[in-house]
Length: 161
Image (cartoon, rainbow, N blue to C red; front, top):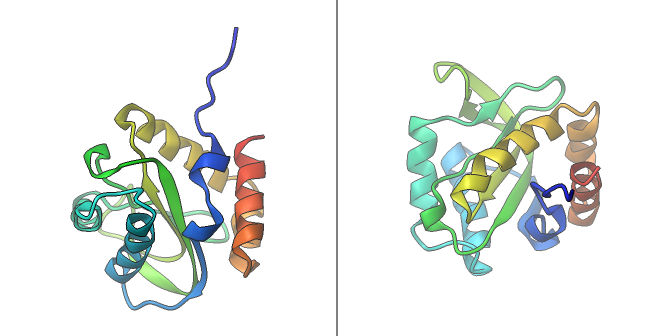
């Protein structure tokens, strides 16, 4: 019996979709920057960014983790051409609202903007990312890395294992 791979990390996580040492004023700015990267690579439609910002207001995506706080903004698959994850490691935290308590604000250090074409896979990808964030020291390593290649490698190695 063959086990279906939930995420093929090498197809989703591309070096040119990883930005490091970024400085932004708010969550909308970083979502716009990452959306632009995805749009340039034809991963998403030009309506993707606004759909993500709208969804983030209704359904916040920041997660509390031990060392490093993350957000995983995303939207419906109708705005996606092909699946990818754009990543931003921020030089200073940006406020996002907490996923399980929208009244709480979290200072987020890393943003994973998900663009998932298959709507049935989206929840699985979100769950896999949350599982990944619980690996001790992983996010802390990502935060200290300045190289998109190192970030890509650590994610691919940890998702596929």
